[in-house]
Image (cartoon, rainbow, N blue to C red; front, top):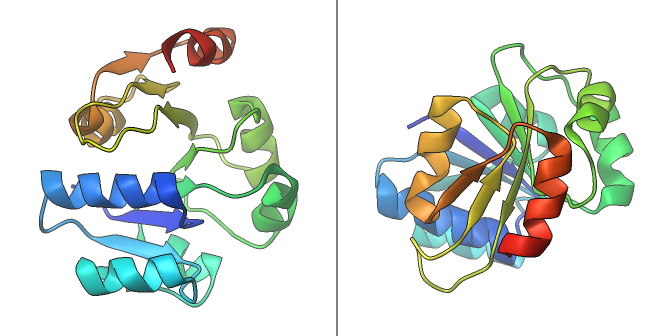
Length: 161
């Protein structure tokens, strides 16, 4: 499994973390913000690493998952530098991949949406990536819908979730 970084630890990313460790107990997951109560609890429960800043997470990982408020994206994008080999996956609603590529000056940006379910393998997962490694990463969470067109992603959210 790829090394995963999560910027913004909330209920949905907690579900992802639990799913990653259920699928691969040796998963390597890095979290920010380190001082959040949820991140600290997850780091005690799973072998996660908490980092002191966004860039420290990015420096350690292959895949970056962002779950932050839309109005903080520009600030986040301006404060980090991604490597060419990394994939940025956004859980931020309403921000298209094209906008993410411009903000982060990075070509490999993917949108992800999941229905929240208390059970692993029961969530509908919608991705804009056709990359097989990224699809494998999220396939343990439930039925996977991969959409090639951004407009299909937005219309799928209403119909699937």
